[in-house]
Image (cartoon, rainbow, N blue to C red):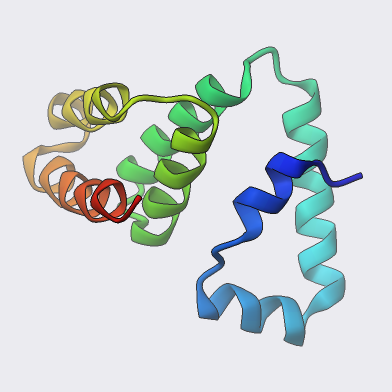
Length: 113
């Protein structure tokens, strides 16, 4: 069952994801159910969960996922300093260009909030 936090997280969805949901509703629902199942069984609070997902998105150079997880991390109480720390940690594991790109995406999201 969706919570108020889920609604806040769904207030902004990129157009491509909305198109995906409309064109493939069964796949979107199955993916959402899998994500909820994984989230429900992990031991982390929402903020930590989002910071972990942010780190993975940075490593994958997934701009949309970085932006999404920054928004969601902020909604769950992460500070801009914590979010920046995740991106800075990526310098030594993912490379300087990857981390710098992520910092740019992060800045665009945090400035808009």
